[in-house]
Image 1 (cartoon, rainbow, N blue to C red):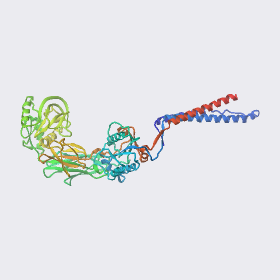
Image 2 (cartoon, rainbow, N blue to C red):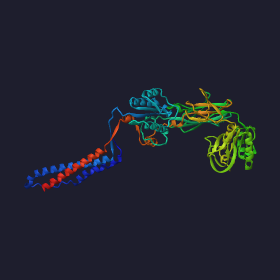
Image 3 (cartoon, rainbow, N blue to C red):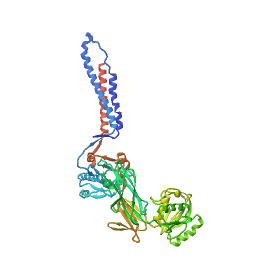
Image 4 (cartoon, rainbow, N blue to C red):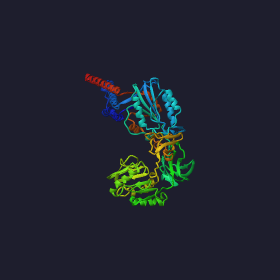
Length: 600
């Protein structure tokens, strides 16, 4: 098989027709009249004409061959030579993508089984002089023998984790580049999801990519959340349906193993599933779709807390916007009447939500009261400017702040204005860096202000930890009031750095506090990017991995593996043929000229 590195140069083949065109244009057969007196010359003239036509035809062929050889040489043709089974010692890394999406069923077989079968075929060609590594969905290279690799393949199942293929290929390239062997190759066996690639430095190592090539239609749950986070006792779950299949699908909300709500949705819909709980406490909820070819993304696990509305009151120092929003919450049954939680500009009661005093001179007295209570935070200097609140999806996310006090301390930071603490908590006291007035922040005049106060009163001021979201195997930083994560294998204590690895199995894992109470939940779910099954094309592969990556079929992979398909550049041979054609043309033309002069 011949390929061209510069195929556009083949357009110049049209030039090769010039000698033929010129020959036809100059060819002229004049009219003749045969006289008896010159008939004896006909035989001599016919013989000379035959020799002349033969020489002209030879010159035409040589000149055409000369032009064709030059044009083909400019197109840089390469040909495969030598397909033998033996190969030079090679450092080979198999990137075997058994991530969530490999559980999809394609033509009656799971993708992970197709990948494992292809890997076994490759392992049969590994020689004693080769070195072998395997990178599964966890992204960690493992040095293995062919026998060990076959053992791993026999028990291979889809992993709940996501594999970033770009990072995996870069890790594989680093491994083979460190080996002093003649051959270095990375083979990627994957469904090659477009969503599995990320940007980064290109690799120069030879990368061969193979995919089963058939992509099923998929439907998925991309996220679900409880609204509001604390039910009293009723609430709802909002879920997002993703994918490409346009047929309607049934959703179910289950609680305690029984369905409590149903709905029908299409891809792209956000569905609301109302529910009502029986008694206060934490709930483990599950939203499910009808199963399709990829089962791993048909469920979403989440938690909600059922509690009586917290009694709350607003002092005059809290401002008119707070008083109005609190009245709305009380009328709707989201907040009770009482002073369990007090909103104002000074300490009042065991649980307080404090905004800065309108009078800057009162800051000193407030700081002294905070110190006397043992609260770890203080109000600092007042700042003017413009900042965006970042709260990782929690209270005040996205609000604009134009005036604030710097908050000084080291306890829980719940939201930040740019990089500085803006909403903090210690013990039962919550501090805001800004007054809740429209000249300090736009939050009071947005639709999110009432839910913001609901969150402050019912969860943050009460010392509750919001539910944490994670994917299987992620590293999770636990809040300071969490002592352990409750798993089926037993409590997993929080380490000194507050970091744990999320369980591999999706589900709801409750968080235990110092007194043994449940203070939150860890919601472990699939990565929605794994549900996007659309494959990457060559352009995406080369942009994400490097220009040397090759996307191959079964036969092409067999040819290319272990450098089995050597390529020879034919440009030199074509240039040599062009030189020979030019020399032959010169000889033929010279002989013709001498013959013509001799006859003259």
